[in-house]
Every structure is written in C-alpha cells, then in structure tokens.
Image 1 (tube, protein in one colour):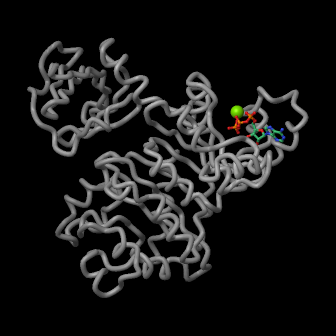
Image 2: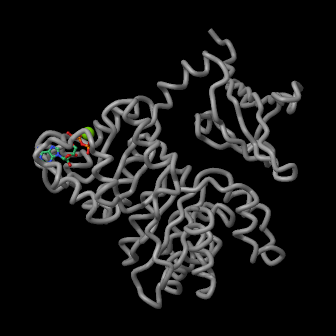
Image 3: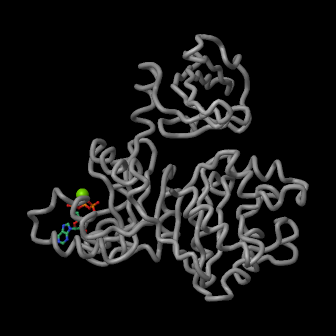
Length: 376
Ligand code: ATP
Ligand code: MG
C-alpha cells in the first residue's frame, strides 16, 4: 500500500507586528516533504502545498518547533486521530536526569544517548534543593534510603533532559541498566550505570518508569522554567554554542567530551530553540562585518542548539577557549590547527559546529544573553 501519509498538527506562530498568537492547521505530506497550512481563525488557506527546505519528519512532534519559510512555528497539538495514533508511541518522551555523581561525565552520557537513537528535545543544568528532591522522589518517602537519596540529589548540579524515541521510557531504562550500579556492572556491562554509577544510590542517571510518570516528570522541569535557576557563574567565563547542524549530526556529546578533556569546565548548560529575531540579536555585532551574516542566522535558528558556559581557566578562559575552538573556517582549521573543535567537527564556514565568544570583553554579554535574557 502506498497511500501518501498525511500528518495534521495545530501550529502556533507569534506574529510580532500584530503582537498576537496565530493558529494554523498544518498538514505534512511525508511522501514528498511538503507542507500546507490553513489559517484557523480566518478560515482560509495560508500556505499552498509546497516544499519546505530543511524540514524532516523527525522534526514533527508535539512541543517541537519548525521553520516554515522563515516563520518559527510551535507544534502544540495533533489535529487528527491518525496523526495522534501514529506518532504518540513512535515519539514517546521520557525524563532522563544526569545525577550529581555523574555530571562530570555528562559529555560521555549525552553521547551514549545520541548513539542509542534518542533525540534530546530539552535540557537544562540546574541544582535541586532538598525540597525539590523530596518532591521529585515523593513516591519513595517511606523507604529507608529516602533521606540519603534526597541529600545526594541536592549535593550538586544535575542535568534534566527530555528524550524522545520509539518506546523512549523502556529504551532509556534499558540503556540505564539495573538500579544498583554493581549489579549493572555484572548484568549489563555496557549500560550507563555500569559505566558511570558508584553504588545503589549514586547510580549516575534517572529514568521515568512509565509514560505517565514521564509526562509528570518532564513537566516538573520543563513546564515551569522560571522555577529552575541555571547554574551560570557569569564571571571568568566564555559562551559556547553547539550549533544546530552539529546537534543534528549527533556530535554534541563528543564535543562536550572534547571540551572537558581540554581542561575546561562547563558550569551551565541549556538547550535552546532560537527564533530568528533572537539569532539576529545575538549575532548583531557581525552584521555588516561578516558576509555570511544571513546564513549564520539561518543556521543558528534551524534547530535546537546547546548553550554552555565555559569556565575552568580563570582569567585565561576566554582566550584559551577561543584558541581551542579554532579558526572560523573548518577547512582552514583542518590545515592549520587540526586539534581544534572546528577542525574535528565543522562541516563548512556556516556549519562550523561551534560559536564561541570572539572578544574577551563580550563574554559576559553573551553568557548573559543565553543564561539571563533567554532563560528567563
Ligand atoms: P530512578 O527512579 O532514579 O530512575 P530506579 O527507577 O531504577 O531509579 P527507584 O526504585 O525508583 O529506582 O529508586 C529511586 C532511586 O533511589 C534510585 O535510582 C537510587 O538512587 C535510589 N535507591 C533505590 N533503591 C535503593 C536501595 N535499595 N538503596 C539505596 N538507594 C536506593
Ligand atoms: Mg524510579
């Protein structure tokens, strides 16, 4: 059977000129990668069926954002039963959390997540208070290990992440391995807990135990963003953005590992889906200076990116990090500076894997742009 599959969503777009949210029915045709849109309020065709560059089936899920002809649309609901039935099990979500004992290994864990076939759709480094940890693990309040568990969870930063894949809940728990890290080492030696866990309580990561729990737990972290302070220091730091094309290639974990191996610390981390206006604002200083400004903006808002606050080398952090990132053009980097991040992970001058702050005096501004302005 070769019926063209048509998926229907409700999409929202914030119209800045009119300062209102507009709603559309968005139809996606998988056979030829085309999109058609209806304006719901005005009951008319908004976009005739047409091809959309850079859009793929993987981008279509509730809570996701897509770019259609330079408009950033948020997919807020399924618009028919077929779409709902087809996609809700395929695009299941779960909460993964890197616990305080394993945050130092976050790059390797994120790499395992991408290699395991998951998409990361949300991520944030934050520090749970005792009260947050008690609330998160409320189901275990009567257990003898509760006090220990809560103290451990509040002992340092964690990284909460929303993962998506086929049967994400079960698959992530499979990748995690048994709760007890030593049992994980004997029974599932390639699991996350076997590799990075210490004991029964300090077991590297958390995973939701059912779809409904996953919904509750992802809302806990991502539906109330104001509740969760990020961990940025805003001093002696530099701003690093792992660009959407590098994230899409599945290289984010590898890049994070390389940053740590080079002796830097990552003191804050968050995933962002930038809108065009934000990307333009962030790259403002390059406007009229760099010929590829438009393409740079386009790349930065073409999908999710990771923003990192880089620390660890005191007053030399900004300069050292910039050296480590390397020349803007990966081809030049591969010839002249083969050990730099862009030499290893960049594709071309636009898709060069990493943005880092150019001038030391701009570092605080850039870190603040992500971790104060956009995060709040
Ligand atoms: P998580 O919920 O963190 O993904 P899990 O579902 O494998 O892990 P739970 O039974 O929900 O395990 O326990 C929650 C957490 O409490 C465990 O991850 C671990 O940190 C801690 N814990 C569980 N059982 C014990 C135990 N017997 N002794 C000490 N700590 C434990
Ligand atoms: Mg559990």
